[in-house]
Length: 302
Image 1 (cartoon, rainbow, N blue to C red):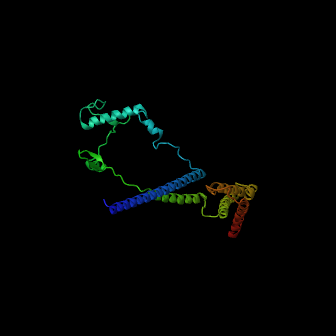
Image 2 (image 1 turned 135 degrees about the vertical axis):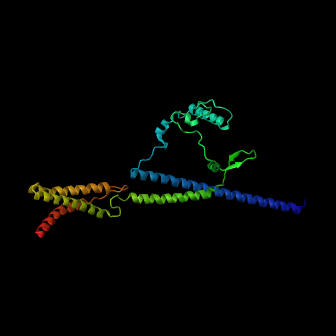
Image 3 (image 1 turned 120 degrees about the vertical axis):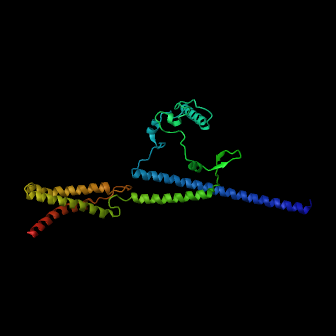
């Protein structure tokens, strides 16, 4: 080997070494960035979880207990076999053994069955009558059930679909989902800060509407009392007491309770205003005004 060839080979090796070091540095920086992004996303998801828990407690939503199964204990109690332990292992072993014996047709099974030499499978378990251990599918559905790859031995095995996953793409998708969760969380907070009764109205307008509605309902009762007084069922003192004090007080306390029950947001700091002087004025003026309007209407018609 000449000196020129040796020098060219040395330069090539040096370039390959520098390229390898540069690639290793780039990969290390990429992994550091990925780890930093994962840590930031984990902190963000933890903060979102705490915020959702706080929101659930504010709107009085009970969280399901951890580790609860969808079927519940009733479904587990309905199964006659043991829940865990050696009983489950022996049960699975006997089921697999009888299934293999009956599936390949090597001979009659020794497990208790229907008496014709075949095993009942799951149907043989008490309480599970009419249920087969291995439900049969039609030929077309059986072929479409799982993608299979034929080995050289001619035995069909499930095809493995291994796809390369890019961590950066997955982190970007997770970040977008976290942004979407933040947006929905903000919308939920805005909705939780609105009361169920007239959510788009201001607190003052809502209070005026509620007290006015309660006063109008009391005015209808005033008209009923006036009609009852006209036929002699109610005397004048009782009618005056209900018009001046009774029905206005009922209307006022009714509006107060309505604002406290349906006019209070799910998430609110402190006590929302109920405008008690305004409600007192509306109720104690609207009911007598309804009686005066009734008297003027009757005299006008006469």
